[in-house]
Length: 337
Image 1 (cartoon, rainbow, N blue to C red):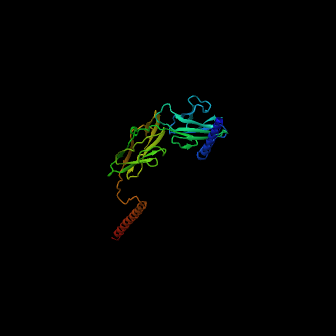
Image 2 (image 1 turned 90 degrees about the vertical axis):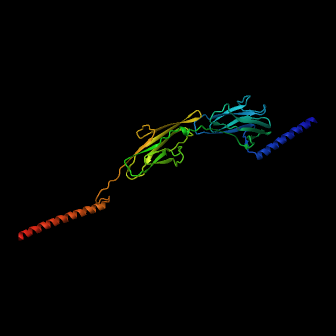
Image 3 (image 1 turned 30 degrees about the vertical axis):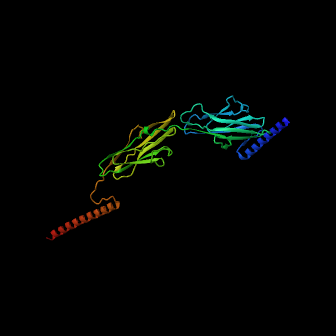
């Protein structure tokens, strides 16, 4: 009698387990393994960083029951593996020979935190439902009990940006030679070689302009970098064609080299003129010369010049003709006397 009850109890347990698996199959996103009794657990790592840094992270799958099957290579501490960069890894195979419910836990292993890194602290519950025919239904649950088709970990690295307060901001200096009656407005432009380069506030499409009225100085402002690399800029004066001025055509080049030291990005800046000489100030000299007032008919119009030239020739001919006429008349009068 007791055996019959025990046998019925086992049948009821198996039926209940089968019903549970059917319900899960309908309501949960699961991975169905092709080979009976063989399980693979997909794990995806997403790593983001603008810098070239270490990007390999470690993980561990542990069994919540010491009798659970584990992948080859497992130890008493569980099954350890690593993923580099953004990639997917499959744990397995885990081989099952007995029907049942098998539970595991998957976490990222961080021996010690490194400055700049943000680690995914997600904990996944891995549940394998093994039927009598050894078909397996896989359920993956995160900390909030949300279900997924895979375990996903997102790690990233962000270094501390360069300090704008430490950036050398060379001013543009306008020197005016000559004696203009009033001060003109001069424009200067900072232009990035690549429009995606960091720029100071107020820039548009990799360009920013400042102005100086008469002689004086102005600055473009500072900015910070969030990624390693070499960045190029140039500074020059925009020829506004102010009357009487000859403009300076000097072009200055800024080379910013950004490197990673520890968790801090460091900026090294060099500013040179067009003969590759290092400078601390971008200096531009404009020369002013006033136009002289020329008396007479000269107005800058070539047609007027020609008109007055012809008029002058005609006048000269008439005068000479009048002189000849008067001279001949006097000679005639003398002969009659």
